[in-house]
Amino acid sequence: MSELFSHKISLTKQYIYSIALVLTASAICYGLSAYLGYKVVAFILLLCVSLVAVSFDILPVLIAAILSALIWDFFFIPPRFTLHVDTADDGILLLMYFIIALVNAVLTYKIRKVQKEARKKIERENIVRLYNTFLNSLSHELRTPIATIIGATDNLLASNARLTELNRHDLVAEISEASFRLNQQVENLLNISRLESGILQPKYDWTDISEVVYDAVKRVEENKISQKITININPGLPLFKLDKGMLEQVIYNLLNNAVQYTPPGSRIDIVANDYGNLLQLTIEDNGKGFPVEEKDKVFDKFYRLKHSKAGGTGLGLSIVKGFTEAMNGSIGLDNVPAGGAKFTVRIPAATSHLKALKHD
Image (tube, rainbow, N blue to C red):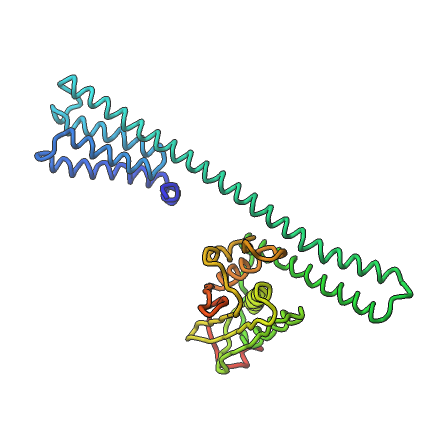
């Protein structure tokens, strides 16, 4: 927390805040000097130096330590208003105060530095682990359709006389399905790279939500799914000024995720409503839902549920979150009490009930 705080404040402001804290504490102590002994003041000033040490960089802390020692000597140690110290005890106290303040500053800085390096090491290890998981999943996801395409193509090129028209049709269908899977993985990789680089910007246009939903459902159903998808869209839904491509990809990825993680014959419901200038889409299924301890991680890049079936790169839902937030929206996930999961997408956007605007 202190590292984050210090990085938000410029070095110049750190100097100003450090000096201001020591001066303010000194002024308060000076006003209460009739009630506070000068030794108590030393503890208060040390506390101020400690607060600065856990929040700021080393140089502002050293300045605060030196300044507090000089102020304590000049304004509080008898005789006051001079740097001279009468007794050996007070001289030793002043020296010890100065040493303790400096040691406190240096040690606190070193501890923070060690903690920062430890966090970086953990982050690097997590990144390596995530990328290894991702590469293992990706290699499987790419190898399977490529092997299918190569095998089917070899059989077709062999011009085997024993191949019937049905055999040829089946081989072409295999190539088509494998190509679709391959294209889907490449799309995910391109989308996540665009999101990471920040170059992906929404292209707003008047969008018919019904059209987008039905197009996404059609793409999913082309994969010959066994789940039943029902669509419930408010008939009076206006046009929304959104990025049609992003929205369709959000819906498609959510549907595809529901298909992958629900048993055959499950129900998937899509509901679209508007609340003023807010589009709300919900995609709900009656599957098993998500483990409570993993709900907060499902939108993380490369994350896959612990007991999920093999396959998948863990990019689908992170792309959903990225696209939704790119359009200034939000997405939430809840488990349905009766069983299943419900994703809720909310996107603020301008609306129009003039359908003709869609073609302008």
